[in-house]
Picture (spheres, rainbow, N blue to C red):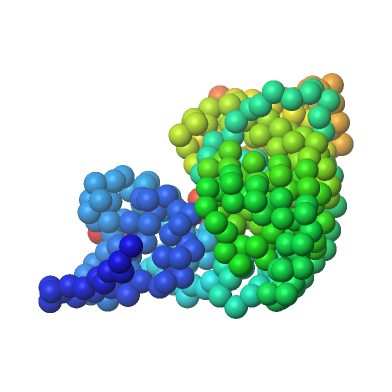
Length: 391
């Protein structure tokens, strides 16, 4: 196809948008969030009075929609809030952007937990950013005895700087050649030399077996992700989780999907709602780090709904589960015993209180403090709505 150029004949003003934002941050974000960020950039050099209500009116959105967008960009280190000495909100600061390495948090598909801290040593010009996906958790049929693969947190091998001779030598291996052919066939296109190096890295350095690599490619194709950024990200996630066989990968995918699906269903989260990697990682800690079974996690979700039916969050559920963990809860019987103990203590405290408020249905069983980061985000929303829009 012939190349084309883009130009303009208009004498207009323009806003400068970082290429990092276009290349990395924008690809993972909700469209409404992107619009809000672009508008904030547009307002950067204006002297007009800015309010959340004004931004909402510009896009025909609600003020809460604008707050959610700002909360999202704060969580991505794109924005921050500026306060005066009295703690009153003064403004929104646009932060410098950067090209993320493999550790950047992105939307994911509730399947593979990509705990990728170190960046991969790459060839010049080779992009290894995590691919983003916004697919919903899908519950698949699998044996009831399937278990999560323990997180062994293996050290990630450095990616070699492969030469042309290295590629030619690798292609002399019939197994490797078959993997290249399989990838080209399923991805529906020829692969580039840099992409061949990615296959070499996964096959040689990450030591994927032929069966495991074939399943990796099939899995990516099933998710509609036929790019090598996503392929490598999933491979690294499996490697760091200690996955060595196709069966172990299938077990992890099933368990992660199943637990996430249970949580979202219990909390009434609809399928058209985007699931972020941060949320999936949080859910993953409930099974891997806290060691809770799926039925106990579901019970915590139900308890959260009873306490906060109009605004329950994953962080609220996390607070319940952390409380249960501190109280050495292991079984449903332990949950019931702890509930009874908290209810009894609440009744005693209420009976002893003089002139206390009545009618509250929140017991000390679920009356915990959410995490600092979660609270600061909630405070931000309140300040935006109450302070910025103050006449």
